[in-house]
Image (cartoon, rainbow, N blue to C red; front, side):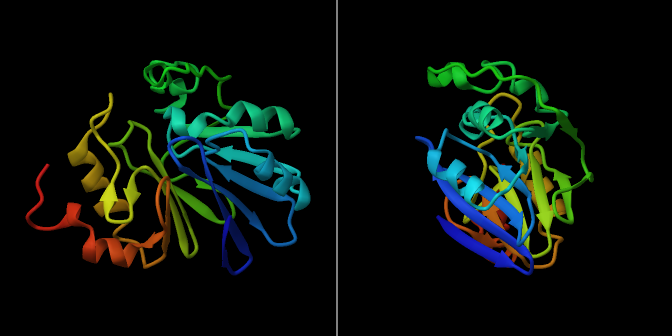
Amino acid sequence: MVTFKRGNLICERFILGSLQVNSYLLYEADGRQAWLIDPAEDSATLLARIKELDLTDVTIFLTHGHADHIAGVSYYRKQIPGCKVAISREDADMLTDPDLNLSTWLGEPISLAPAEIILNDNDSFGPGGKLAAIPGHTPGGLALILPGMVFSGDTLFAGSIGRSDFPGGDGRQLIEGIKARLFTLSDRYVFPGHGPETTIAEEKAENPFFSAEFTV
């Protein structure tokens, strides 16, 4: 578990699932509210941490609807009373359809109950956060932008970007969306769906997908 603090906000990272997804527990110090971001696997360790912190108002936030990021949703829904799931309007059908969320292709079909919360671009969400719709990896990919941090899902990674060769993907749209919605932000930490943390400044300066020579 890796912990990051920014003011009153605390973020803990748990690497879960066969595809090593970064699942994040975000909460405010001395609060009871929390946001569980992309729960990739049933984890007794993560659940125990939620209970240890006495976090009783938990919302699951999904950056997008691919199977590796939603595989733990049912477990936490059952284990945490009142837990609700939030996903973008464009990716909402992926929760209920194993073909759309690619779990059929992975060999373990996942079909979940619909989300309780449907999200849209520019919605306020989380502890002083705002959502940015960045399609291209999936049609409804969302980044959660907070003071000092961005949760980018599979949109932006350290030194890379998300795949765009899955159904509904669009590489040019993904790159343009990152430039318009993330690279215009002041510098802050980026917490991606896989791999290490990075910063907006590092990716603007060094990510090869944004070099003058790269074309989609």
